[in-house]
Image 1 (cartoon, rainbow, N blue to C red):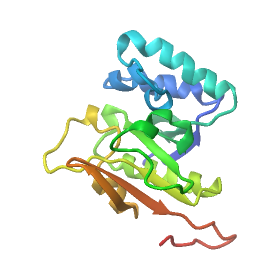
Image 2 (image 1 turned 45 degrees about the vertical axis):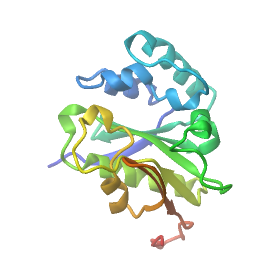
Image 3 (image 1 turned 180 degrees about the vertical axis):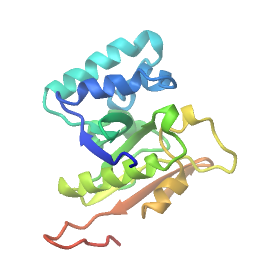
Length: 202
């Protein structure tokens, strides 16, 4: 029987699973960033030399009670990660010429999605995104925003941490603005989940 997929918030209890995931082959980019780059304004370091510091900062964030994303699992093995949260927590987005605010709406942002190299190509990124949509809805979010890559040629997997336009289109996201030839801002409106019923979003 194929192992089932599930996603869990990053907490003190699941922190070790994120470490295990990022330490797998093919995780050099995430090991150097630990999803801290967009949480800081001004210059921010990423890469091997900065990895330990970024890891410590994300760990401190988790220890403070913030849940900065979801860890995806096949069975009990961590296989993926998606970072999301209130837009205002990602300070670097404010000054980004591509990802700066579209309007004054209250939104959650998705800034990273990662699947372990050995598990790519089997649809896990779509499952991670679906889990993120459900998680945002369950936390009262009404508008979810992403900043995917949109270009005809294929990029190396290591540089697709924002995800592709097609990934988000399949999940019901719509383009709201384009400020770059290769990047777009996309959104999906969310409705509250009704007890005992599945609610389709617009």
